[in-house]
Length: 108
Image 1: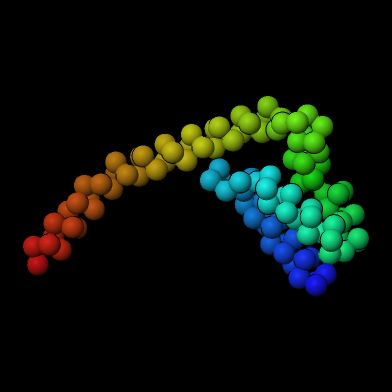
Image 2: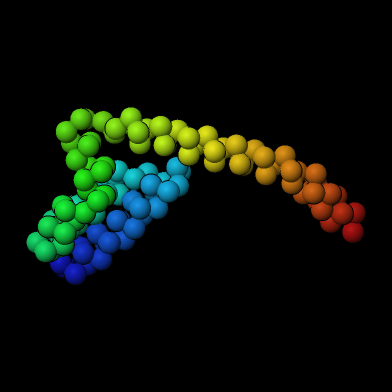
């Protein structure tokens, strides 16, 4: 059972790391799950996680300040805005191409 919890902890940690890069994926819940899995699974991994960068940046800030620091909020807003703008730009660029392909397929 401990091995499964450690594996789930690493999966959750990886998803949390992906969440720091992609604005669509949440970060904090995955890091909380990783902490719980490491706590129940192995004292060694629990200590490693408590001293890791992810715990210090996100979970300690959440615990002590009861919120995410302003720097990370700004990074999140910029990331979400860039993602939405990229989607809109790609949609506007490729919309005529997609419509052309659909018309060509329907005519055949």
